[in-house]
Structure formats: C-alpha cells, structure tokens
Image 1 (cartoon, protein in one colour):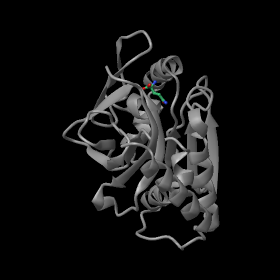
Image 2: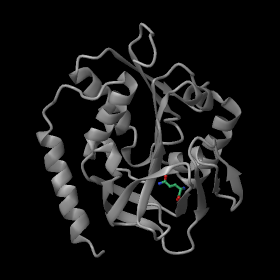
Image 3: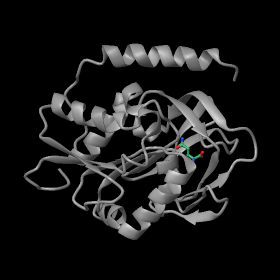
Length: 246
Ligand code: GLN
C-alpha cells in the first residue's frame, strides 16, 4: 500500500455538500464495498466544504455539481491546497464532471469568467456553444488501462480539451464525452482521473473501482468478486446507449 497507516485504505469523499449530482456519492460506496469484499481494511471520510482536506488519504473521489457549487468548491479547494499536496504524495483522485473540470487548469464558471482550477490534470474546460451534452454514453477505455467498455450518463455544458501531458480516458462510441468533437471522453495521468460519466459511474463500471484499488495497493490483480448484477446493469445501459440516435 502507498501508505503504511494502521487505518488501512483511506477513502476521502470531497465536498459531498457541493459536489454530488446524479448519485456520484455512489462511487465512494462502490470503492468501499469492493475493498471490503476483498477483506481489505478500509475507512471512509466525507469532507464537507467547511472542513480541511486531509492529505493522508489514499483515494479521493470528487463528484459533479451545478455551476455555482462548482465555483465555490474550486475556490475552497484552491485555498485549502490539501488535495494538491496529497497528489504530490502519490494519492489517487477520481473526479466526475464538475470535479473533472475543477482539477484541470481552468474552466468557465457560472459568472461566465475563466476560473483557475487545481492543475492536477492537463485539461482546460471552456463553455460549449452548442446544445448541452445530455444522455447515455458508451465508450472504449484507453487500451493501456486494460478495462472493459465504459457506460455512463452525461449532462454538461462544459467542453474539455486534453493537453499533451494527459491521455484521454476513453473514446466514445455513443454520446459526446469531452464535447470537443474529437471523440474523446475524460482524461487521466498516472493516479489522477477525470470523466464526464455520472451514473454513478462506478456502479455501472466497478472495474474502475478495482483499478483504483490496484493502484492504491500497488498490485496487478485482486481476488474476483461476483459481478453478475453489475454486468446485467452494464448490458442494459449499453443497450440504452446504442438505442439512442448517435
Ligand atoms: N457545471 C458543469 C457543466 O455544465 C458541470 C456539470 C455537472 O457536473 N453535471 O459543464
């Protein structure tokens, strides 16, 4: 494990009071459950926006949010500095939608202003000129990650450009993803991930939770768990995504 703390694996849910649309909080529940299913000692900390971000977490999860809460969350995270320190120490971050935009270099806020992000991932978000990207998404995850297809639900106005030091997380088969028109969805570098997929995305794609656990534990594999329910849900969502007009 990255850390030798006696508390086992430490999950941190960042700002549940500001960033948790579409059940994104489910992501932390899925990571926690899949860790427990493997007999791992795991603790979970929900850090509200009036509290300090601990730097000792192993996996930080950040959800989506409406435009105003997104601005407030970004301001507080910048002021706090804890998340950047944790990443500098090797922590893992998985962020969704507004969270994804916040961990990039900048995004356009609810006041129409360019707002600085945490710079944890080489992405820049602008405000899309076209219709809001809303609907089911099906995408193939970047091959080196070795993960099965990704399904999710997107709802965003922001458009995210992936810079040269990050890699797109996935390539869309259906839906918009980053919204730039190049067919990419999300971005990642080393231990930092961003996606537009709500759902919550881990409930639809538990292999992502397993990937984060493997990174945290520094192992190549985990004992298998019964994924029948997840597979049924994923197949249903793939059918929903492919049924909508491309
Ligand atoms: N406010 C952001 C956008 O519309 C993020 C929305 C979200 O998190 N669902 O792009």
